[in-house]
Length: 551
Image (tube, rainbow, N blue to C red; front, top):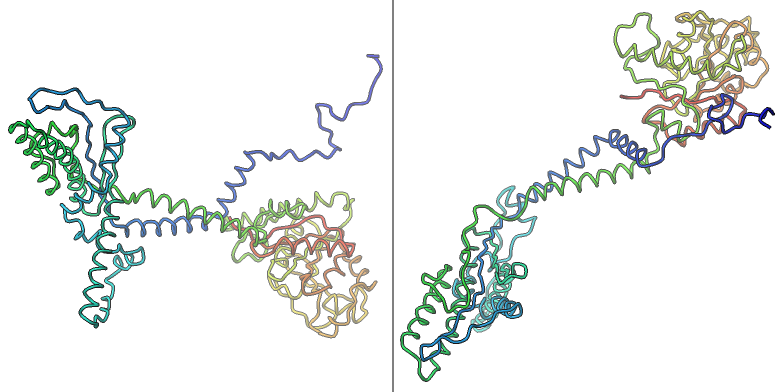
């Protein structure tokens, strides 16, 4: 069985040249990353503009916000032994987590905070009394002074005005206290007995005063409670009462001044371990974070704009995209060179060299695609676009000139509406393909004009009757093409498909047809419709060409 020859399996380790190989392009994360990078590079201007706009708006918003300063004071719950009336020390008070939470709620209580609010006269603070301006108002403040607010009419009875004023004052006090309560924060540090008290304000000196006053208020409340218990005793010692009174007075005075007690307060069941100091800088807003977020939002918005544009804008911009969308080979990508009117005899700039190299590659691609059609004979190549302005005439003339300079005879049938290169004067119906077919002239009676080594004949005539009544499917037109083919290669510069069906009639005479797409103007749907129309007319569409690409 080992000596018996068998056919080579298709799944051998060598690829066969006559077998169509599957597309091995990756569809994984790397391919997605490459596509995203290519997409970002293509739309880098849009993404950069959106990112810059988002950064500018966020910076404007961040710098329009008033700065907020924050100060923190820390307190350690530390119960002491109580002294009974006879001068002896009582049992050590226990402190557990539940009692720590209870003391925390005592600090947050409305009774303590309202005492601090009143002692510091916080209701007269403009930050708490008035309504904070919004973003638009702050923006106007940054840009310039706002017009003075109009003063409302205050006419009315004296009694009605007085009652309304009292009610407004009460509402204003409540609103100010609620704002004060929302700006103060007391919390435990983890599971410890340390309590932190924070306060935020736009005034850099106020947060430290409020935090210290809150601690002093808590100490005053605790010491005052013990003082009341001591005074209620039947055998209270005067020294003990004096000590509690001094501690209570010091705590009360510190609460009014927004500082800490000036003397030690051992009966407060708490020890101050950190005083609130005036902050050196604002803690909010975090402008760098807001600006970074604005830049990211702008970038995301730009990405959305790019995706939406891709969904709505179907214009062709690259040869790879054209080949992928149309499922047809793109044989050439011609760069956009301003002032290019064909293949020059002497190349004087790198742009001209790049243009000639692209035309040479296109000619080579056409020769490779038409290898089976040539067979040592001349071929007819038609080049057509969907709309005017695709540069079909310039492209045809350049390819014809390059073929002619390679030693072949070339005949160019040029569309009269394409004025990209060497407009040929037509002095009569005999000097055009339409005129010759309309007049019934023989191919020998035609007169071709020599332009840069290429025999040129316009397709349409300046005689309107000849253009309207000429049938390009007439056998005389076929004979003209056969005579031109016998002399050498033939190029057909066809009129746009959108405006005339003459291109379909003439494309059927060509051995190969190329569809030209202008980069950034022609859409995928236009190319697809052009290919479908040409194939329905019997034309052999071998590929596409993208013209006037940038970059």
